[in-house]
Length: 60
Length: 151
Image (cartoon, rainbow over all chains, first blue to last red):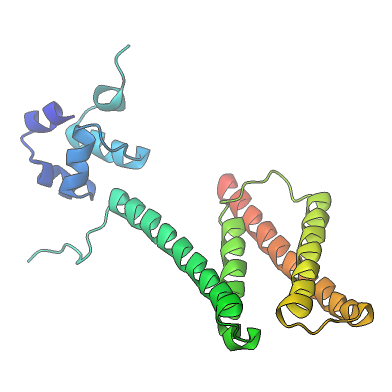
């Protein structure tokens, strides 16, 4: 998710503002220390133009 | 000018706040019960000296269980008469034991069986009202949930 955000030229704060979260929450999601709700995941994927699988899918 | 709200809480901070509030609420209730027992058994105060505590604890418990039932925190498939009657029986038994302890142990009034029977009528009625209250809000909560699922 961090890569997708950086590729889009957004800071953690920018993305947080777009999805209605705090910078800390975005940071924790990127570090894998917080499991966001599906609703927040969808907002993030929409703003980064990615799919759920791209950002949150586990590699098998 | 920034339009951010003063308390910019997101789902994570709301979740953390909710958990902390729940723990603090639990500790407050437990502390109040501890204080009641301390006043009663150590300070030997009359039970009437902390009736305000008892009322707060009772109302809190009633509203807590009602809210848990209404908002679906206590899951159940169907509202079964057998379960309601079992719950009613449990409250009656606990209420009777508490009443016996209150009058014969804590207040030292040594109630006769006949006088205790009079109290039992009140216990049956109050327990019935409590169960009716819980059943009503369980039903309303279930109806609300079913309605949301249909939409």
